[in-house]
Image 1 (cartoon, rainbow, N blue to C red):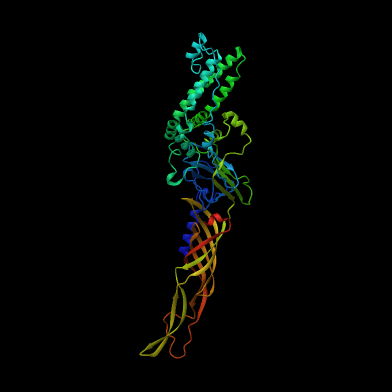
Image 2: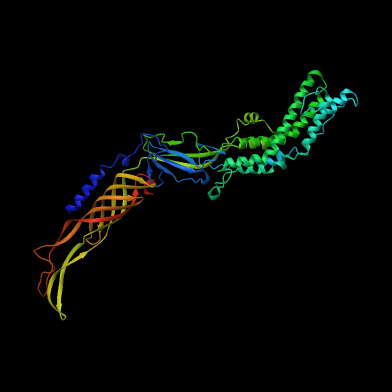
Length: 499
């Protein structure tokens, strides 16, 4: 017994020297990348949670002590997206496929070119010769007359009519459409364009190259003609025909302009993702409150190609600045990636557990026993019976300290318990130390209960004589036995600690 009490005293004294982090209830600093990973099976101090963008899984509720915080980060971010951590409800928003009408929008003007109206000059003479060799779409020399300008407009329209913008860029359009969808995740998640964006950009640039080359060529020619028309207007008042032709050229050129805008947007993408750029920390807003506080946050993503895709897919093709201004009051294009729920709580130091005490030494009982020889009773003696038993017990545990290892909670408690001994049919008590891992608790206790002993000077095996001998006299007394206990914890301070 003395040895048992000595061992308990040494354990308690040693545990009192554990570092303060074990019993920390509030945090003085803010969580950062050096904080431990959040446990889903314990009440955390400062901790961090990391979400894999290519295999995003919503974690269970994260339980955090009052005054502490959670650092949120994203691994494997994609260069195609901007990520933010926002206060948000748990509603799910499915991102619309804004590119579903892109093919129709791009091809709306194909096959609908307006014929260029010619302004004829003299069929012979110096002006006729000038008009014959002048190329106003590439050289402004001698472009001071209407016939030369309208013939140049006609040539540009003829060349535009030979180009099927949709056909020459169909592979690039398919690549951009794939990039506007969320990544497939899992084993297939690390494919282009999500992981090897630089190589994907090179491929898309090659797919759009022919369309972009045509766009650059005709953009330059149409702009040159526009300038020549403006110069002509200053000297001649007859310009309505040329303005009409120029408008037709712009309409014919629009599919190439849309493809060029897409190609530029792809080229502007970075090669590497940056994750959540700002200080993404979820903090306790009311650290002094005793009530629990539950916060719900969302990691949102925005596809960087989406604004350009909307412009390209729109019925009316607008410049980037005009599209930005017209969409200023539109709803946010953000879509939720993962919902995070954090509950800030003040865990109780008291917990209850139920289980069994297993005393390591037996309980005793005494009675008379007949001694027989050849079927004849020759004597009665004092007989001792030793019984090993288990004691169903309810424990009250006081938290001395806790630790989170590999995201699982373990703790040490000072324990007291009360139970019913079926052998002695009396109440029994236990006191000692308990170590718990998740919900399972293991205790080393002193079992305090009633046992039986002989009185009147009788000893075990003593003869009681023959005849109608009486049972030997006994009495009960309080005994302390070393014991082991196993139980299941029922925490009073929050559901997190029991997991």
